[in-house]
Structure formats: C-alpha cells, structure tokens
Length: 155
Image 1 (tube, rainbow, N blue to C red):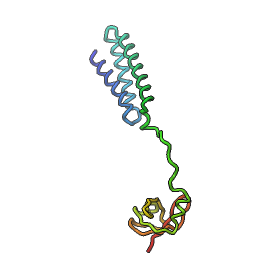
Image 2 (cartoon, rainbow, N blue to C red):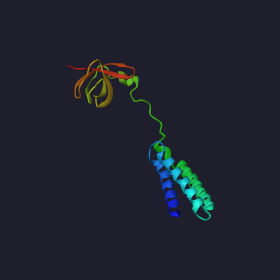
Image 3 (cartoon, helix red, strand yellow):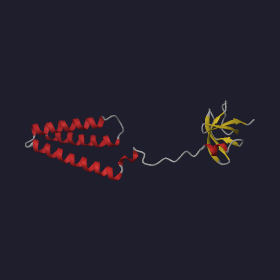
C-alpha cells in the first residue's frame, strides 16, 4: 500500500507540473490534486506516522510552489502568454497611402477583395474596387478610403 501512495503522489506532482505547460481546461491540474489527496489519505491510513509524513509533504509542496512562483516572476515565464512589447504605430498612415494614388502596381496575391500588392518595391495591403483580381495582374491605385488602398485592374 505504501508503494501505491508513493506512485499516486509522484503521478499527482507530474500532473500538476504538466498543467503549467499543456494548454487545456484543467484536466491535469484536477487529476493531480485528486491523486495527491488519495495519496495523503492512503499514507495516513496505512503508514505509521502517516500524518507527520503528509504534513511534511504539504510543507515541501508549498515551499516548492512558492519558489516556482518567485522564479517565474523573476524570469518572465508569462512572457510567452502576455504581450510585453509595445506595438508600433500602423505604417500605412493616410498620407503615405495617398501618395500611391495614380501609381501602378502588381498583385502579389489574389484580391478577393483584399490582398497584397507591390508598388515601387513596397508591399502594401489593398482592396479591389468591385472585382476579383488574380495574382500577378497590373493594377492602378484609384483611391484611399478608411486607411485602405483601392485598386482597379489595368486592361
């Protein structure tokens, strides 16, 4: 019975550890807590001085949990989850886009209605003006509306 309690304790600890790294709805965390509780109950029931062992296990787990939280605070474990960088202002401001009016470009992707075009070596997102335009077609920039370029196919 002692070995079952030990195996459940180890499996519970591994499940709690997996909860940090595996995205999900808490399955590993809940399973880990259940395994640890069952392990504690079995230890108290079948092992001499089981209560002392369970209290010592709880103290060690609390200490390890505290140390893990402090370590992750200091070393930025949450940096994979939380955006810590400041986003740059949109490069396609209205004045820059207006400078493209009347220029010709080539579609890099199909415009249905949005896609990418190349104007003078610059890649810009554009919208077709009332038609589907295939890739590698010549287009003319006809207007700018709501910070978007609108283009027409050159025949």
